Image 1 (cartoon, helix red, strand yellow):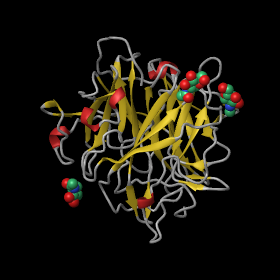
Image 2: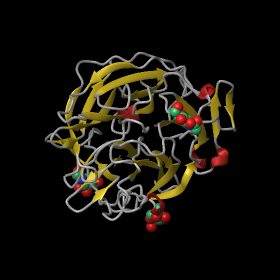
Image 3: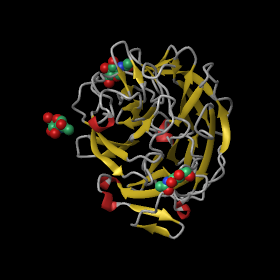
Image 4: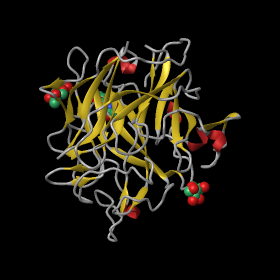
Length: 373
Ligand SMILES: *[C@@H]1O[C@H](CO)[C@@H](O)[C@H](O)[C@H]1NC(C)=O
Ligand SMILES: *[C@@H]1O[C@H](CO)[C@@H](O)[C@H](O)[C@H]1NC(C)=O
Ligand SMILES: *[C@@H]1O[C@H](CO)[C@@H](O)[C@H](O)[C@H]1NC(C)=O
């Protein structure tokens, strides 16, 4: 892989919903029914790209992906739509879930700022790079009465060298908001604007960057403690995402309006993910909060699952339930994601779709369908 012309990930030094009825929530041990099926690839003919995530937006799904190469541009992020069929399943035809939509070519979807070497991909003149790569799907919030939505993404302002080592191990984290209007044309993607470039300042916990789950009108936001696989949790009402003063933070002492420090181990929630990339969601099929993701950052196509009766836990020990086909490249597989927005009833049905980035001669995004017992 050359440095600026093909997608790649950050996997060494740097780190990478839906409403539901009242139920007794619990921890469970989901079991796969039969063999998960690779039903195709999610692909946009215009782009070679990696590390895609997705969120349901009305009757379609909005995807965000990292480094994206086309014949005309190289962007550090792009977005896309996919459609459903009339029976509500992803519109896979001849093994392809077609991703579409018009990405502006001059700037990344999550625009790299001028003090981050700017341009479409954050390339600096000294050979380093600000790699603004999202780890997590956009967080959807209903706004207004006309089906408009705001979609929030926290992106770490990571600065890397050509060999992918991190120049700023705990960078600030930007908050971007994408504005979806039902009046937009079918190919128009909801533009992302920067709300705050240091929403989480340097050397603080990057809540929301490790994932989120929505419950009772509240966004529960996960972030990693310093340089570890240990996960911390904050919460905020859905209508106050942009208001830092509205947040509260979880530690062993309970919820507080004071944020713990990046190294405060009392903020750690055991087994709320592994530190590897993944997705949180709520499943009413299991009456349980779910995390699905990788065992660690790096080269593997393994999928683990953990469950909990509440976002705060206690979470079950993540256990492996599926291993995808490894790509043939040196870095052959990474960026595991679950896609509740593609699945029956936002992941509250009996199934879940998974993707990861598979690297052979080219990059692909296999789409896997898992049915639960
Ligand atoms: C997606 O659906 C829209 C209608 O909502 C249609 O115009 C468009 O052609 C579809 N695109 C694909 C790739 O299925
Ligand atoms: C969409 O169009 C309707 C009708 O013109 C208008 O009332 C509404 O404000 C528009 N919504 C947005 C988000 O622009
Ligand atoms: C994070 O951990 C690294 C390595 O252990 C250490 O050098 C650094 O000072 C820590 N950062 C903070 C903000 O504590």
